[in-house]
Length: 294
Image 1 (cartoon, helix red, strand yellow):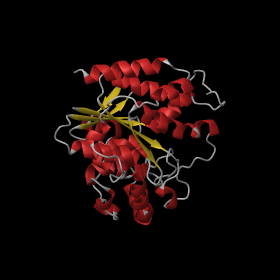
Image 2 (cartoon, rainbow, N blue to C red; image 1 turned 60 degrees about the horizontal axis):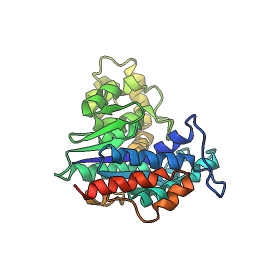
Image 3 (tube, rainbow, N blue to C red; image 1 turned 45 degrees about the vertical axis):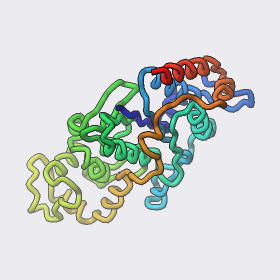
Image 4 (spheres, rainbow, N blue to C red; image 1 turned 60 degrees about the vertical axis):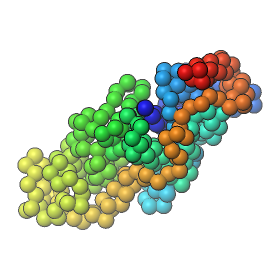
């Protein structure tokens, strides 16, 4: 069995900013991105996916905003974009797809939780996290991979390490040192991507990096005295950045069985009509019929 865990927030942003016409429903509300993502999930099911969960940020802010003042917010985001998240949540549920709208946690936390659950289920051969988000690299493992659907690029643990220079379990440490502009925290001065990777390859995690530069034995790093001093002075903030970068695995996403697609609900035709896409109804019904006769 394979499970597909989809970053709905990324998909909405991607579709909203794609160079294609939007679509307004009969009320005049822009719903083009929600329509495109819903259709994309149906296509995924038609291509053979059986167990699908979609995580969304019902609100952009999360508990992490209480920990760091400049953590990402919804400030400056187009209202036509933000308004489509609840639309997508409801449309996907109507299609029969498991959807996890996050409020206190983030969509990435839901994906991490689902990957953790899937990896612990002996029936699951592979859990595919569908997102290019580097944060999710920390979840990749023996039966968990990451898929960039847009570029059709699949990352296993070896590919994550080749890309970032550290194994999946050190991704939070790497982000803490390097920073993550998308999430709004800067990392520590002097720690670029290659430098952070070299240090973490030697010591594994931030906690194991010595404060004393004389104890460093990372040959490829320039000016270790300055870096060691920076880390020694900034350990508290580095630890905080690692908390920000570490995904939670306690979101409410149900079980693998809850993610199995069993067909659309009775109200799905109304959503297809609102989207101006009546063909979605026939496609979903036909697929449900095929699934039930197997």
